[in-house]
Length: 305
Image (tube, rainbow, N blue to C red; front, side):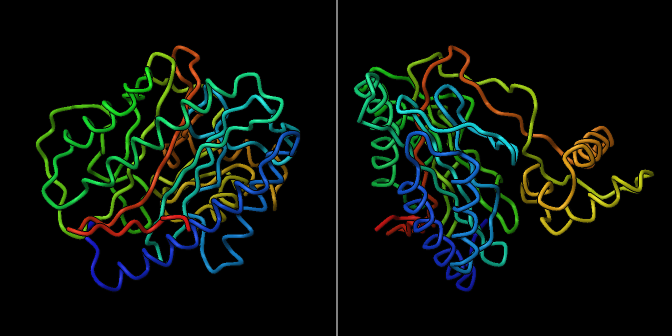
């Protein structure tokens, strides 16, 4: 998406809210703290600061790279040995800021040196790319910078995950921003809004989709027979094309009802499921992400103070 002046201003506002929210999330993520409670607090923080969730706040642990959204009654807590990816998106009138940060605990963590290395690799890859973002840089050049930076840590990028363009009420649009050298000659354009998202791992550098998705998005609207499904669909439609999670729907409806409706909607092609993404070699994964408006002097909308 190429943003105009008004959209640029909304992107900057969304980015400031997202930056504050991720710092808030970092401050409350601690060992033995319940994950659902943290996600609920982050989403409330975004709302209280004037933003809307562009997708559910997510934490992906260890070899899970992305798309982990626990159910409301999940008792899972953070462990001192976890490597945690906090990923969140905020929108203002559909204009999106997408950002992510990796958290590693030092205290009582025998894996600290290994995990902090992965965290630093993804962070430095992002930092190095941001130094060169400008109109005219090619997608392949971006991927090469990320790949070479991560290799300096004796790690590999996750090759089948990428950054992406952002659109109005659309989290993933062309172009894909690669995390390795694809030699793609396509160039970034003036005022294009993108998310740059390096993933580093000590595994194989590939992910696969697992099962039991709790993250979905609306594909299209069709007539549906079931009264139960129609009732749930009515609550999904305000999300437009933006992702939502089972946990949001069970704030109003019983879990059994929600599961029935989601399965019906998925089988009818009305919604798309995004199951958790797992590193193929069970490697630990780190992630860093900023949203950028491409200019000779780029605007990093999600820059954290």
